[in-house]
Structures are given as structure tokens and as C-alpha cells.
Length: 568
Image (cartoon, rainbow, N blue to C red; front, side):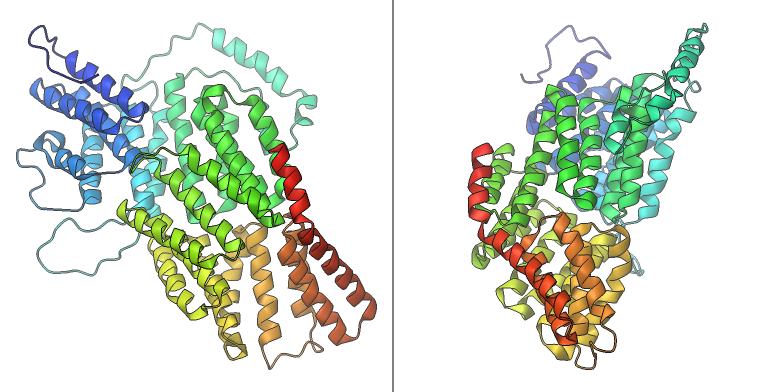
């Protein structure tokens, strides 16, 4: 299908709307270039026919297309065109693609506000919040005195746009959004359902966050499309707090979406809420509870939303395989993840990035440091090419881990520091704490003379990690804290053994939940050494027995892995 102008019989107002629908359809099926061609033509005809409403919706569709597929030289020409900006000269000065996209977003929002298109305004604010979440705003003026510029994202702007987008509910019924003609049926239905909800037996059913999806929701007089927009703001809030590193707020916003908007949710957004809650269980409660919730999600999800659930399952299986030391299974899962992504360049970049990250981690666990570094370096170049700056922070931290474990400790320090700079620029608080912890581990590896500096860095990162980090990250932090004390020549274990034993015991407990046998064995080894130094024989033998058990689990990993491969 190709959008071509018919020679005659064009109905004003219909043709540009048809082009808009055609472009949206192509975008839905992943035909990015064809979609952009159709939407560009819709902009031209909307401008020609003075169809401001269609022009506004088309600009919003172009913004969504750019967010899903990225920007290119062809798209820059569209953004700079006078039709899209509503001026006769375009931008006037050369700017980066992201700056031009920001101008297009604000122009679309301004048009929607002026035309009283409340729902579209809410949608545009959500898109603007997505932009502010991952892009550093730079000054558009390239001349005049150079003022100091703070090149960081602004979480306040993100929160403001998300709050303003939620006003679509308060504005409902005004500005000609909708007029409700209630004959009393709604009130009667609401009261009947209230009796069902207040049934005490209902409260005993819900044992975890996942069960909230089975809650009997009250009917709503507000149209589903308006409720979907309001619900999307809570999903985006959950994503933004995940980005900033606040695990409790991620869970809270996902639960708000589940309890208030599940009955009007699209299959993709409903699956996304499932995914966020199950991921929270996996990180904070371990694999067993997460897989139980995943099984329920697979039963409840529709055929159209199976992709996200399947992707989550592969990710969780890969994490568990790495923890258990099942490296062949982990490699197979990486290959399956890569097969889910499209082969086209610039398409499914998030999925391709995820698959490459996991591939590098699998190679790192296999002690194939050269191949792991090559995969991570190629991934960094790809993220840089497509302006995925937030992902670059994670890739740089992975490169630091590779060099640290390969023995080239000093080579990992520049990567960790670069990752720390990215984290500060994009307000990635939890990842910043993780980068700080990695730098502390690097200083520890350089010898006892750097134990004081490493201890300072570990204590600096502890509040964020212990408050918002998952089981594995908290265990790493406790592990590093104990090693700082053990490496410090001025510290005496006899004087205060709890400074070492408490964090090691906590780390061992958290790692046992994750079945991370290698790190658990190391923790029990250090605990046994401390007890031996203190002359506590019974405690030493108990820790040594636990150490031996986890070593045997690692040695028997091949047999258990073969069984898992058969079932998988």
C-alpha cells in the first residue's frame, strides 16, 4: 500500500484523515519508512486544507513513530519542514535531532491545547514526559554569551508532565469532552458491586500483588479511552521511578494501575503491569515466588499479549541459570532472546540491547573475557549510534565488571567512572550507587592500601542500595563492606567481629534465596575463616559444611542443567 494522491474526487477532511490512519496502521505493523511517508503527506494536506485538528493528531503520530523507531536523516527533514512547525521558515538554525523532536513535541502540545483537544493534550504530555526522562535538554540558541549549562535531565519536568496528563479525568465532562446522561442505572450498578467488594471473604483471597488483577472493579461513567490515558500516566510513572531507582514507587504505581484501570487496559499495557509486578517479585523475593506469579500471568494473558510474558519468562530463566551456574542453558536462552528481535537495523533496539547485555554477562560468567568485552564494546557503539544514552551507562558498567574480573583492574576504572558520569547526568540514582560500589570493588582489588577509600565509597552507596536495591545488589554491597574491614590493616576482628560477620551472614541469606551458589560459597568460606580466627570451632565447622554443600551444588550443575535443558 502506498499513499498516492488521487487525481480527482478528494473529499476535504477525509483524505488527510485516511492518510493519518494509513500511517498509524503502517507504524503498528513496524513499517516505519512507509508510515512516515504517509504521515508526511497527511501533514501537507492538513496544512493545505487548514485542517488544524488532523494536523495536530498527525504531529502526535509522528512523535510516537520517532519514539518507537528512532530518528534518521529522512525524519530530520520532516521535523525541520515548515508544515510540521507551523512557520514559513522552519527552525532557522541547525540543531540536533533530539532538539528538533522536542520542538515538534511542544508544537503539537500547544496546538492540542489551543484546539481544546484535551485527550490529545494528555497524550502529548505523556510523550513529553518520556522525552524528558531520557534526554538532556540543551539550549536551542547557538549564539550570544555562553551561560553555564547544567547538562542533566530534570525529574521535576517529568513529574509535572505526568501530573498534568492526569488532569484528563478532572476535565472530563467539561470542554466538550463528553456529556454524561445518567438515568440512574450507573448508581444502581455501583451499589450492587459495592456489596460484593465489601464481602470479607474477598479480602482473604488476595495474598500478593498479582492477585489484585482479579479484583472486582467498580463500573465507571468515564469512557474507556479517557481512563486508558489516565492509566497510562500511572504506568509511565512506574517506568520513570524504575528509571530513577525507587523500587517501592515502581510497585505502588503498578498496583494503582492494576486496581483502578485493569478493566479498561489494553492487552499490551495490562501485560506491562504484570511484568513490572513479577519483576519486582523476582528481584526482592527470589525466583520461586516470581515463577508462581508468572504461571498465573500466562494463564490470564490473551494471545495478543503473550510476547511480553514470554520475554519476561526468558529473562527470569536466564537470571536463574546464571545464578545456578547453568551456562549452556543461559547461552541457549540468550539465543532465544535474540531470535525474538527483528533483523532490521534500528528496529527493536531495546530487545537487541537486552539480548546483547545478557550475552556478554553469560560470556563473563564463562570466563570468556575477550569475547565478553567484544560483545559489550559492539553494544556500546550501537547504543551510541542510536542515541541510547541511558543504556550506555549500563554497558559501561558491564565493561568495568569484565575488566575487573579478568584481572585488568585499572582498565575497568575509566569505564566505571564514565558510567558514573552518565548516571549523574540522567539521575539514575540506583545505577549510580551500583557504579560507586563497582569503583569501591576496583579499589579493593588494588590492595590493602586502598581499603579506606573503598570503605568510604561502599558506605556512600549503602543507603540507596539497602533502601531500593534487590537481593543480589544488597548482597554485593554487604560482601564489599565485609571485605573492606578484612582488607584494612588497622582493623582487628577480635575487637569487633560483628562488623564482618553481620554483613557476610546477611549476604549469604540473600544469595541463598537466589540460589547463587558461587557467591554463597565464598560468603561461607569467609565466615568460616573469621570463626577460625576467633577460635569458635563449632561455628567454623557449620560454616565450612555450608561452604562444601554449595560447592557440591556447583559441581553437580552440569547434571541438573541437562535435566533443565530437556524440560525447556
